[in-house]
Length: 309
Image 1 (tube, rainbow, N blue to C red):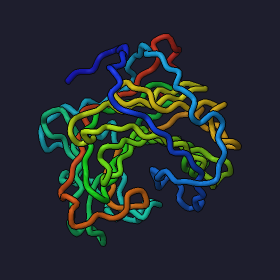
Image 2 (image 1 turned 135 degrees about the vertical axis):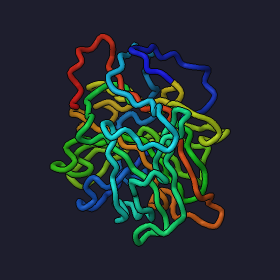
Image 3 (image 1 turned 45 degrees about the vertical axis):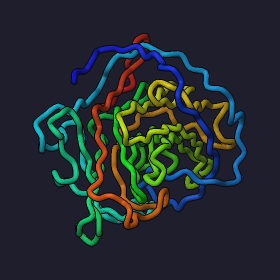
Image 4 (image 1 turned 45 degrees about the horizontal axis):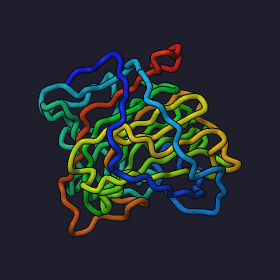
């Protein structure tokens, strides 16, 4: 695989439906940067939640990427990725221990990063997996953030590709802001979730979530999951089909617009947690997700002042 300096996105024929899930969630302040938080229902009011998506394919200039080219069994590039380690539940009651072992995250020699969740003793946990981020290495405000991924299936599996505000250590969650470019509840492999999180108060989350139907399953083939982020407009896409749009006018009532500073990239495969519940006897282990590439691009006509690396 090779990187290109620019690309123009053209949508394919629409083959899957978009649906909306809207709600508010209250979370303890102690969650901090722990979580790719699950969508949740609540009592919030929304401005124009079911409005159509207004989107035009753009021309983009690549500013950062990992194509995951390398020998099988080698580690992810340490100049691009940092492992997050630990088994403390990550604010979501997750069950895995995140490690930096090559048995949990390694290149496959075919141009993919493979993250593997295993049912094995790891620390005090019964499962191991991996979570990688670009914090401190690459952070950016605005642009197109995308990954081509093949996800998984199985109850209790929770893969995600997401971005988090780089002020998480000082602002806390959800005030730092979060965009979940794709999440999957493993028991429902025909559905891809896209969500945005932001605060109404420093500890009260006002998320907006939409789902994109992939009837054959997110594990059947690779799909491109993307967010196109401009100062006053955020659009979520699957295979160039836009299905969720957030603007200052379409955010939850009383929610602050906190999507105005650099964010960093995270990719992980969780086991258990509040989103999909625990695994059971039907859950396949080891279970993998494959990432063909992660790319971040700037609009070709924009002055590139968004990167922090």
